[in-house]
Image 1 (cartoon, rainbow, N blue to C red):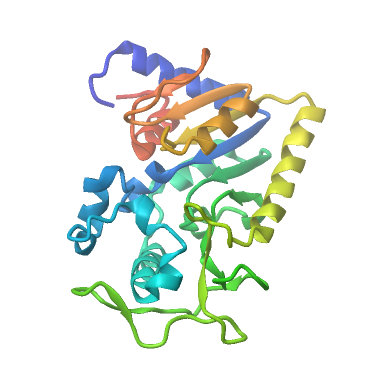
Image 2: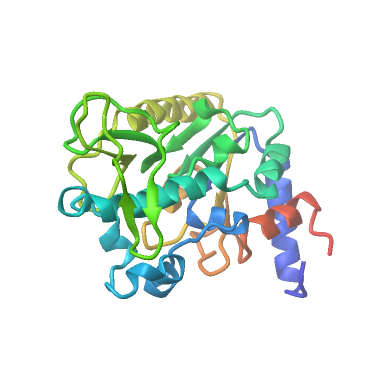
Length: 277
């Protein structure tokens, strides 16, 4: 740990004690969780355009690109964006912090609540039955009209012209031949099919109910979740007995929050090490 002073070291030690005494653990994760694996967090338009320079000339921000209308208006552009992300997430190896979380949890009850669509927790070996992907998953597909079932994107690849930033060749389709899109909740999205996420939500609800019945201490470890889309922050703060908020820029929280202004991997390494320098 850097020379950030005794206050940070004390907070790290308090977080480690809280986790050691927890009866159950809630892991909340936003885009910042993937940064240590090399994934972009799309923070601000400049951050987005660094990741997708071909979109700079069109002045398209992430919020504008993550709009389902592109699958109707310009499916080649839509699939260039989502097809690239699908392959990026497939190729990304989860950073060591995922294993450190598992080490901290041990065999205690736990659940992951994430706004990320990248599937990194499952890739890191977390039980898929203990993950709630509140915004869906890019590793699953649906019809663009919001009808029908959800199916796996396994085996789906998209050929992309990196210069023109357009998908080439046949675009993904549903089993019935209808146009397809990722099963991801986009901005202003009235056609997202939520059935998979709803099943995850039901399991998450049963987890919370079981912890409450037993009067257990639920420690939430929130990693890289910002205020722009505060779903993860609100969920962790609402349910936790103790909240450990890990965020290099927005670590503040309600009274009693153990705030660690660090990246996810650095904070987890410090907690596991007990705050040793």
